[in-house]
Image (tube, rainbow, N blue to C red; front, side):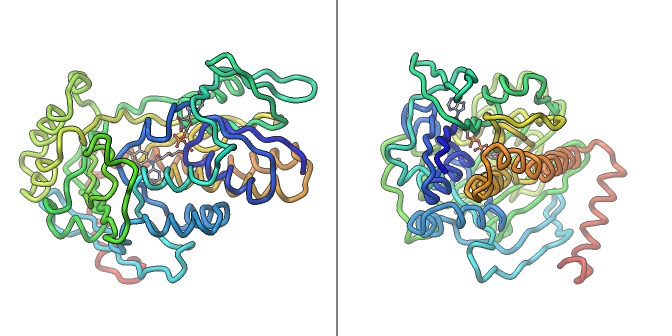
Length: 402
Ligand SMILES: Cc1cc2nc3c(=O)[nH]c(=O)nc-3n(C[C@H](O)[C@H](O)[C@H](O)COP(=O)(O)OP(=O)(O)OC[C@H]3O[C@@H](n4cnc5c(N)ncnc54)[C@H](O)[C@@H]3O)c2cc1C
């Protein structure tokens, strides 16, 4: 295939796609807004599920896949549902998958980005902030903030939740604020009680709020040689930690003015009656690790007519983080689009097929993530009581547990 592909955005989905296309010999260039690779790195971990792992395995060259596996945290095979007093409602256990390409992984965002950025010399261009595109009779011209342009036969907008490519392609597609705010932080693993290091924990709290924790246990053998010089809390990629996220609706507007220390104090106040081990986790989180995230979601749009510009990942379907599937869906997009573009089909047909397939699973993922967000912060006592009963049943019934 002689088609020239331009990917706008060198994030999770865009870089995975670029690797897949390079492997298949397709002419591809990635244009990333950040000036350097470390400019916008964040310290939280990401859960890669079997679908995301399969996409990475298929698209990455073998050396990058091995590097990915070497940087993942030790896998947790337990998922606990507890009350705010840490009474277990259910503990789900899954035996580890023998095949790493079909397994769950915990990976630091920094490591994932390091792995995905490597091996793309001459393909991945930094400091290229996309501004707009122009469709001509032959190809598409991309305009960047530095005044330069590039042309391609096919443009993939992989520029994240606030995608400018989407803004131009689908101006009617929008994201809505759910009114939910998450305050998230990370505590050193030494400060975390055993319950929090065994696997993710969902604290089914009293109505109106929820708390989720997830450990990232860094393998002792792995090292990170690149980020030592920058902020040790946000960018440290070698320490083990437990991340937590407290979510609620209707937090006072003043929360948006608080710094990390203020946000942590606010959460500690909101959970003052909770089990001391939960409070200890929050207390131990350094100021710089605590941040506030307003939760938005995209609203699925009707099918659009396919053309030489398409979307991938959050640009196409940003979702709340309450299911932990946004990155996995972006990776799936990369895998599906890569397969279609390298199948020998006419590129316009390949894009149309990709969009049809992507819309089906992405709409489901967006809806499921929105539902999970609502359940997380539900104000309804009845609903909360039903949830607890459901988890107790899950814990008690082996068949359901599986
Ligand atoms: C707290 C939290 C926890 C999460 N946990 C998980 C999890 O455990 N598992 C999971 O699957 N998902 C998780 N997600 C969701 C996940 O982070 C995203 O869905 C995923 O990163 C989307 O990937 P992407 O490639 O579409 O976009 P991104 O990774 O955001 O990449 C977009 C890229 O485009 C670049 N860009 C933006 N604008 C421009 C421009 N104008 N020009 C050029 N480049 C541009 C950006 O700099 C960026 O590099 C979480 C999200 C949050 C907020």
